[in-house]
Length: 133
Image (cartoon, rainbow, N blue to C red; front, side, top):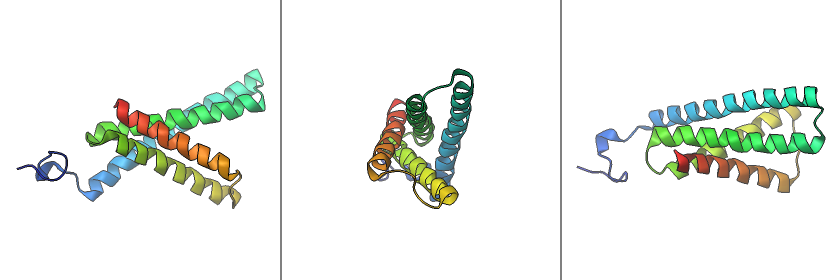
């Protein structure tokens, strides 16, 4: 008998603990990708002497690629409403990024417009990854 979960039987619906574990896996993937890409950007900065504009563009690209990977993984794990799960992955990625920034600097080091743009890029990247998965 199908439940209210988009045609999935009641027995197949994951519990809250399984959903949380899947979200953690997707975020872990996104932050691993972030770490690797930041390392590559650091090496490029060191070896090629990138300008500040290039570094800022690289960081934005890293946000999008990382949230895309997290949204992709979460979409694959959840199998239904993938774009919404990807959007959630991108939003949670952004919130954790802001919490880390608050913990390190004790304030947000960006203007509201920049924060809104970063949120939209993170959420959009995650949603795109979910849609592609």
